[in-house]
Length: 114
View 1 (tube, one colour):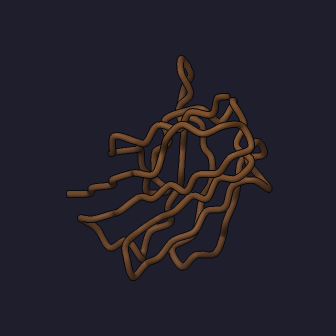
View 2 (cartoon, one colour):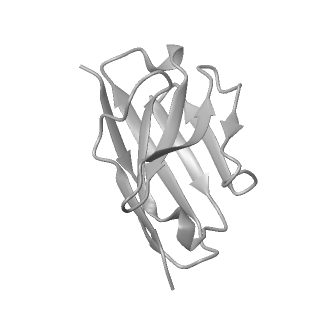
């Protein structure tokens, strides 16, 4: 069974940073492209970033480009999202997912507020 467990969220002031993690199990993590998506209060899922199975083929949504960095450690079955210069509009529940799939975990809440 595919399991994805996100962590690392929290409350941060505008301009602050957070690093999200997603530990994967139940599938061969190193052979799948992965993505981060988010859901702001009252809104639908928004794609944030994608990374290829080997760590290449990286893409970002325009709204986070230059501030967020996606990475992965296939030896640890873990996906990361480094988020810098956070803005109030980044407030959302963040989920990781297999590139071709939908979020399966509980997500991690990120709140950017002063």
